[in-house]
Amino acid sequence: MKKSIMLLLSATLALAACNSGTKPEAVSSDIKSDSVNTSDTYACPMHPEVTSNKSDKCSKCGMDLEKK
Image 1 (spheres, rainbow, N blue to C red):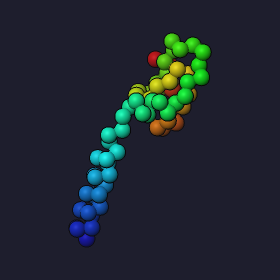
Image 2: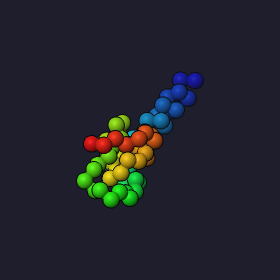
Image 3: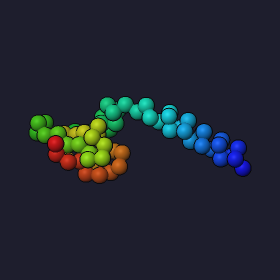
């Protein structure tokens, strides 16, 4: 039983380490900008690397982007 738990824990940590290398630029480019006014910047309160030029939804958590 201990071996199974340790194996599961090791696999979980290995997967988490693989996913931690996501570049913020790749995430923020998921949101398309249709705004006319490009001086306004919106960002997610939970994920500040997710930005847009219009009020939209965060691509990671779905929260509304707030004006900076």
